[in-house]
Length: 462
Image (cartoon, rainbow, N blue to C red):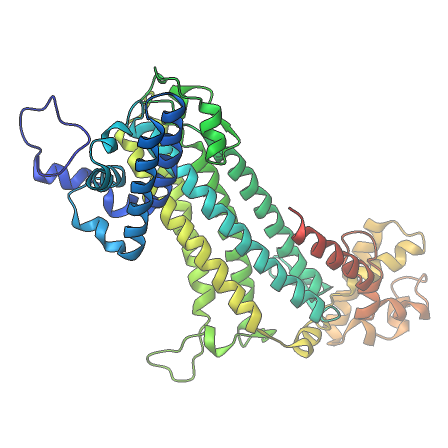
C-alpha cells in the first residue's frame, strides 16, 4: 500500500497513488486531532467498563494518547510527515508507537463512521462556545455605542429614501436584536449537535457491553443517539451550524452595507478609522471601506457552503457514504470566516467616528416630519387615509416653494384645511417627532433607554 490504512486485508493489489491522494483527507481533517483524542480517551474508559481493557491497559492508552496530543502541540506539522490517510489513522499510528498493540485494541467495536461524527460534534461544540463569546463581545460594543450616542438623531430609511427620524441608538439596537436571535440560533444548533453517536459502530450498533449513556456523559454530551444508522449518517447538526452562519453573515453584511453608505462622502454620517481602511493603488485621495466590503463578500461564500452540503446530502442512500467527507472543508471555513468577520466588524465599530451634525442635518431635510402632520389631523378627528392624502398635497406645495414644512406659513396650511391651527408647528420639530413614539419598541428617548437596559440584561443571559 502507498499509505498506511485502517483497512486493506481483503485487497490483493496496491492502491493507485492517484486514488490515494484523491481520497486522503488529512490535509483538512487534521483539525479534528484534539477532538479525536478526547473521544479516544473516553472510549478507552468505556472499553475498561466493558471488560475489554484492564485498568492498567486503559492507563497506558490514556498516557499514550495524551503524549500524542502534547507532541502535536509542540510540533503541529508532525502530522503531515507520516503516511496516514486521515486524522484517525494518524492517531492510531502515533499511539501504536507509544503503547504497541494496545493501540489496535482501542478500535474494538468502533468504526470511523461513528468516530468521525463524534469528532465533528466535539469540534463544533467547542467552536460554538467560542463564537458565542464573539457574539457577546460584539453585542457589548453595540450597547456601548448606543449608550454613548443615545440622543443622536438619524434619518431612518425605507426603500433607501429618507422616511422618518429615529435615534441612532435605536438603529444600532435593531442590529443588536438580530444578533441576539443569531445567538439563540447558535444555541439551538449546539443543543442538536450535543448528541453522542459513539458506540453506534459502522451501521448496526455494537456487540460489546459499551455503556453508551456513560460514554456520552464522559464527553459532556447531553445524551447518546437513539438509532445507529441515523447516528453515522446524520449531518443535520452541520447544516444547523451552516444555516446559523449564513444568517449571521447576512446580518453582518446588511450592517456593513449601511456603514459603507454612511461612510461615503454623499452621506458622511460616520467615518471609518484609518486602521481598518485601505487606499487606492492609483488614486491617492481614496480611503476605502475594504474591511466592511470583505465581510459583505464573505457572506456569499458561506451561503455556498450550506447549499453545497445540502446538495451532497440530498441523494445519499443510507447510511455512511464517502460523500460525507465533503462535510468538513466548508464547515471549517465557515467557522474561521464567522470568527474573522465578527472580530473585524467589532474593530470597525470600536474605532468608528460618528458625525451627529451631519445626521441631524439630513434628518431635517426631505420632509421626514410629514407623518407628524397626518397624525396632527387625526388628532383633529380627520380619518388617517384622508389626512395622508392631504399631507401629500401639502408636501408637494412645500417642495414647489422650496421650503421645509416647518417654514411653510400657517395660511398655506389653512388653505388645505381649516383644522390647521398655530399649534401645528409644535409637532414638526425632530425632537418632538421622536419623543412621541414612547411605546415599547419605539424610538423615543425614554423607550430607547429602557431598551438599552433590557439589551444589557439580554447580553448577560445564559
